[in-house]
Image 1 (spheres, one colour):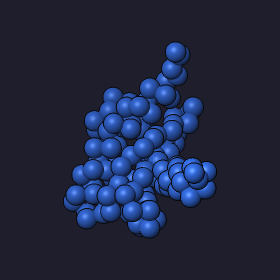
Image 2 (image 1 turned 180 degrees about the vertical axis):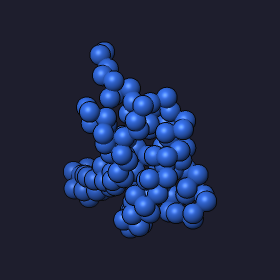
Image 3 (image 1 turned 120 degrees about the vertical axis):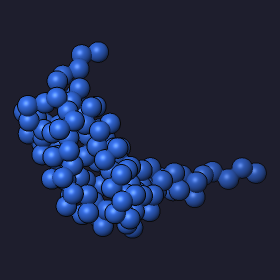
Length: 115
């Protein structure tokens, strides 16, 4: 497989940001959040960080709090990563887990009945 530089940076950012988010959840009493994916633009200016929550109703509050802390995360990453410029970080809620659960529930409800 051929990985681009932005893919390699996305993997590294995912590891580092996951640790920072875990610490923020503990320190700031945020809803339980985990990092599911990171996408970095080709020009390395922006990193979209997708997060999931255990309780989907708390997702908006969690994403808002993380976006408020994004500047601090970026500052910490600039000290730990060997990069000339760390991308701007924006958090987004990853609703793929919620969609998967909804589809699974619909399939269970509409499953053919065996006689």
